[in-house]
Image 1 (cartoon, rainbow, N blue to C red):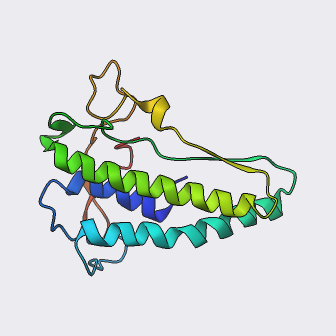
Image 2 (image 1 turned 90 degrees about the vertical axis):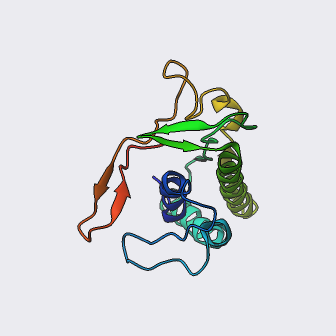
Length: 171
């Protein structure tokens, strides 16, 4: 399953095209982030590490003999974007926006790997799998025959009236 931070990251991917000063409003609470996405989301990602460590430790306590495998997230866009990318529904991301979101994705993966390493150091049989190289050439920007990650599927209104990204997007 996705953590709150990574779900937010993926939803943010559909909204960042507006401008780099975009401030994300949390659909679940209606609270607006105190800083632009480019500043606040990396801070949110960093706060997840302790939560993930506690989650992995809880899994280990429930299943002490299990081998725990934690997969990171693939890059949504080419590692080095060379052209704009149609993400669906008429939205296109520049190479700069793709690079920004890739950077956030790599920061998320680095944090997940760090949480796994911290728990592994406590003797837990836990392993991190980096999917980046396996997904190379299969980004949102690729043709439908080689793309493994879905483009933006649709929007819907939440019960609170917020425009939300279809959860099937970017998977």
